[in-house]
Picture 1 (cartoon, rainbow, N blue to C red):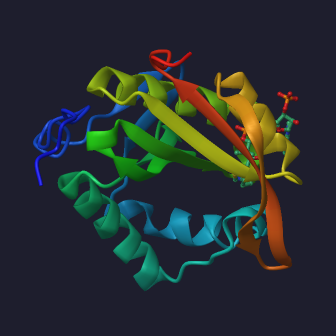
Picture 2: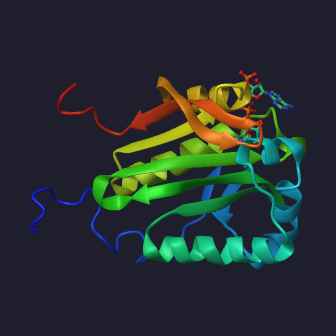
Length: 192
Ligand SMILES: CC(C)(COP(=O)(O)OP(=O)(O)OC[C@H]1O[C@@H](n2cnc3c(N)ncnc32)[C@H](O)[C@@H]1OP(=O)(O)O)[C@@H](O)C(=O)NCCC(=O)NCCS
């Protein structure tokens, strides 16, 4: 069946090039490597990251994580970066769902406890959002539990406007949570 709408981002524009590293202030936002396995295992053993991301990682799973994101970059279905200060990984930012032809993605992030409270997540999210908009995406959204105030602040500070509350949207260890939906647009909708 012919598609009457041109893809927002033609296939190959992202996966056809290697994943870039981005810089903002002292932060380097770079692809994950096998050397990051220990920090990934430690991150997913941390209380708040486990609580809000509802998963843990063994060493083997962390190795799979690194390979998985390289593969998703190549297939243009997602992108994930380590956020580092020099050799020290501080956190993670990525687009965990990505639909290039629709010009749409969903962002995700976490920051290790020692680096929290200095605007790492918001600055990294802004850098990745700008890169995705330059690629041709039009909308990036993110969702966080209504109980996660720190994540709500990150969204607001990165220009992701609150759009509403999705009731019982996401299962956590203690059951379904209501989730705030936030989004940033590159260009206003034609219906606006
Ligand atoms: C949410 C999270 C990503 C914020 O990252 P960050 O780089 O610390 O973000 P900021 O420095 O901009 O701080 C955001 C808010 O966190 C709170 N905060 C400040 N210092 C903090 C600290 N030391 N520890 C925890 N939260 C802190 C504040 O409410 C702050 O908002 P403010 O700037 O209006 O005061 C990080 O706390 C985290 O990874 N938490 C666990 C996993 C998680 O929640 N992931 C997101 C799931 S949607």
